[in-house]
Image 1 (cartoon, rainbow, N blue to C red):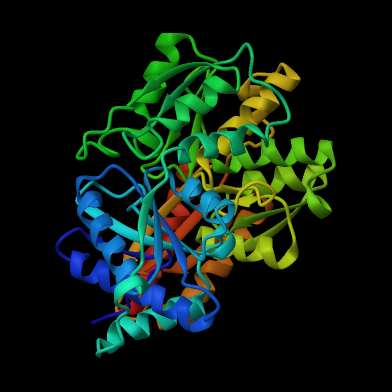
Image 2 (image 1 turned 180 degrees about the vertical axis):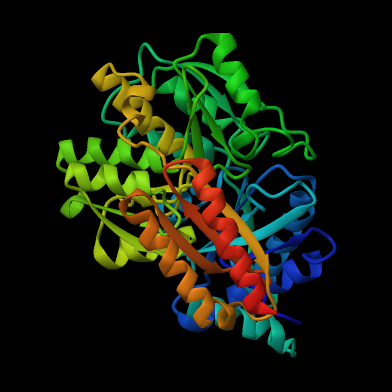
Length: 447
């Protein structure tokens, strides 16, 4: 068996790679590890899921695994990932479990684990859980009254919405928004949250049937949202993914506003309010050069991390900072959330619009995105190829030619035998030419 935990929990094709048996084993192992860490009380776990058909099956397995190891379970039903994180903290649970594969296609599913307080599980706890799963030996199962009990929480969505609304600096009266729920976990709570905040809401793809999650909709398929925003004359549109931990936006003209632009809007608003700790924003190395230029001109410092919202979270927590995120739309505001939260992000962007009277296009124009081209080069040895002298030389040459007008990022894939060549330049043609030039050298050097 290979490594179970990836960068965002355990994920795979449901009932094939991610089976009920494996789900039960992971859940039971998590409860056993928690119980071994603290003998003072039986652990309590909250369990939520997105509406994938396989989620019903995997939820049953996860709940059974937790209870079999003596953990008490609070079943939340269908709720977004950030809601599970919030309720893990609010209910003082020892563990949060979200069954979702986020933006992946419907046949996939996954298990995300949260520690007490709603934070992503530390690596050492993931390693301990994985070791117990791999061990597979006999263990002392609780019996009688020591078996975990299961109960349902029926107002989890309302509690989560109350939490979101409590974070808002300004009501959303006068704004019309199209909300694309991706037929996912936020199909009920997202439209309700925006309406209760005062917005006029048009909800689309908010009728999950177990198989239509992310299907031609949501943050990975923006065309339907663009069409709806224009046809309804809305002020903006927001698109969630299947578990609603990220968001992309569309302005009134149908132009896409990505995570970099959203972070810039929020960073400027928070600095104005005095809540942007040390005037610093945390981003990943994939953020566009346009964001770097805009923040430098605004006097806001950028701290960069590796790709992945978990690394952004780690930096935010370690440095006590107030805002970070990814170009893909994962935006994290630690004052209100312990993970990316698409609904929270959308509410705060709209609050800025309502407070200033400015359009989203105007607010987002602070960032002029440079054209970005990504070329994937198959290689046998990612790390070795990236460090070869011809590769380093061509990267240095292109960087010198681009100067301040662009940049190069050469990144070995974390999951595939690829080197990713990313180039930003003043024009798409220049970026493509530079990326192809570097890719050719990488391919030749790799043999």
